[in-house]
Amino acid sequence: MLLRLGSLLLGASLALNAQANPAKPGGDTTTDKTGANAYSMPAANLSFEKRLDFSVGNSFFRNPWVMAPATTDARDGLGPLFNTNACQSCHIKDGRGHPPQFADDNAVSMLVRLSIPADGSPEQQEWLRVHGVINEPTYGGQLQDMAIPGARPEGKVRLDYQSHNVTLSDGTRVELRQPQLTVTDLGYGELHPNTLFSSRIAPPMIGLGLLEAIDDIDLLVREDPQDSNGDGISGRANRVWDITTQNTVVGRFGWKAGQPGLRQQNASAFAGDMGLSSSLFPADDCTRTQGCDRYPDGGEREVSDDIMDSVTFYSQHLAVPARRHLDNPDVMAGQQLFLALGCSGCHTPSYTTGEHQSPALSHQTIYPYTDLLLHDMGEGLADNRPEFEASGREWRTPPLWGLGYASEVAGSEAHYLHDGRARTLLEAILWHGGEAEAAKQSVITMSTEERAQLIAFLESL
Image 1: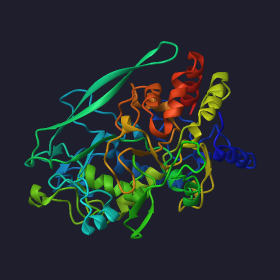
Image 2: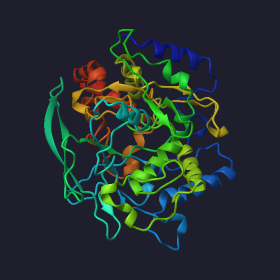
Image 3: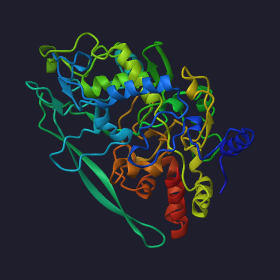
């Protein structure tokens, strides 16, 4: 099976780079920490002074916000509607979230995005250019299932699953779960009849600053929207609105690459997840119907610019853990299978970062295994909810670095894909469709030994 041209060029460029070291996927920022805290370490090349800045950001990321007024005025203003009171509650140990396990559970580390289809009017087209979606009129862009005393939560999220089996060539049967979302106990009336829903778990936090430091041109050169090279892969960048520069730029963060940088991503999460205002998002996700101005707030900017700076610095400098078992024969064989399947056509192995405001993140040879582009993943994974230029079938390629630590960090079964439906890496692969359909079919027809080798490679990352 032919490799993509980009993979061959990548190998050639890395051969010229003496600093390239696959054992250190984050370059000099890589941590040797293992176990439950493998995702929570600062970049290894941070100075002592910058590690103090990292610790300050960690405190605002980890500790809960409270409702106003409070003596803790640096952390007050929570709500009145929210999903969680601390960033760490979603990004558990800085890792991935999970869907609710039981009917009475709050979603917490899984969010439900809401929107309605655009009507094509010039006014809505201009709104879409800046905001990416048309919010549901009564409930806004995100369902908040918690509220401060006196306010009503927007609703309750329930997930049920319909299962079907995929039989592999060796006779192994793999159960795949299709989530079925239900929203009950609506607090503010009926939802718009054409409401679009998208369930999304919190992604892991490692290496985000390094992804931010990749030059735009290194992402855009991999676009192939018309599949001009005929390899079946047609990635393209999402184009999103940058609030600071007031321009349309390349999107990088979020499941559909709907945010341009970490500061805006963090500010959006503060507003949507916790109901906290900032200079980038002066208002939370409340609508007029909900009357949130009746409740106390923590001031005009509940998240000050200094706090936003601290949280952004923290999220930029969470280190990627070192790879393990690189010399294992099964891992090496699995890597060759990964390339032969064409997986690197989306999961681009390596980049060298450009100039970043943080010297620790600049000019690092990294191995994230993502192109940060949008790809059609087929009907099985479709949420049918567009976001900026992303269609309802498109998702940003998630980075694969740190995969081998996912269960250790979670302390239990890890969850994969945008809504956490996959409980194993094999399940995640078998959900691939669209541009990845051919690769998935090849995995189905692999021998038992080959599939084990492919998984061994992924678990080595």
